[in-house]
Length: 88
Image 1: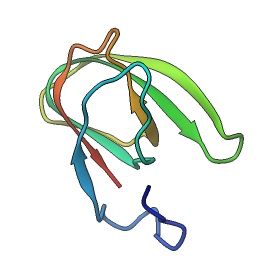
Image 2: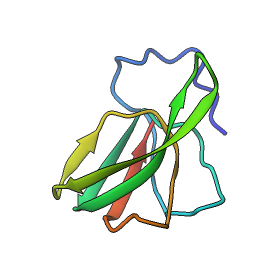
Image 3: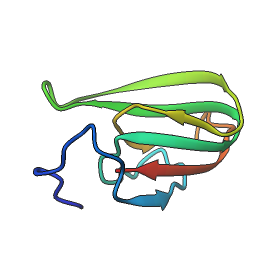
């Protein structure tokens, strides 16, 4: 996990990694998700205030979309989008 406690959340992302959707595995919290090839994205949105992870489906995401959502997991079940990259 990357310690980003000193990162300014309005600064550009400093890290990026490919996301393999999984129903069981979390990844380091991202500040955004890039969707290369569109479709549905099912993810766990992260709230640092409540430490709550809520599953949400974002339907019909177009190719090349940047979703500015803090995320810790992209679920395999229900996700049809591909070429997903997390940005932190």
